[in-house]
Length: 177
Image (cartoon, rainbow, N blue to C red; front, side, top):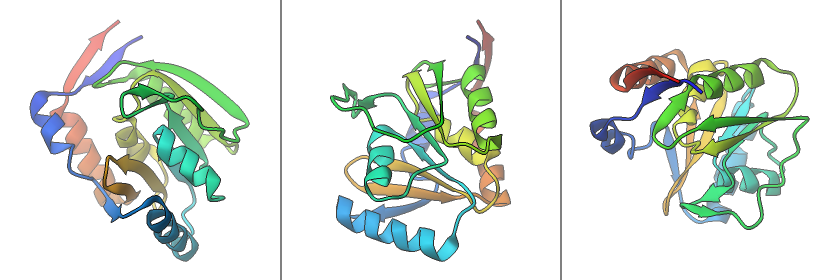
């Protein structure tokens, strides 16, 4: 396992702010708003990052092209892992506060695939939303939860890709095995 990026304490604070549009509200309210956005904008790909978001999408007939989960929610093991329909499951290691080369490659492969893919992370999946933004086609939706607030929708654009590239440059570049 090669760690490509490591989170710095300064960047940890910065990333607590959503990098996309925060849909605030209850589960019912956020899903209603998200369904409307998906219907209006018809994103080429939907990526969900996180167990709760992924499970809620499936419950609302919004199956993501790529779901990235770790079977942990709010630092606790999930009793019922998200039942995601995926034609392919990839398992990767990605320790907390890092992004591994293995995870980057898995996301790239999944996004270039014509099948629904689930990536199960041994470690933490949160930062992998950045990689999804970087490699997803423009106009795709990358979705992740904002604890106790709602769901974040990142609409991929060249500007968002540049913003994420800047964030990755601020991270500590690593190459330890």
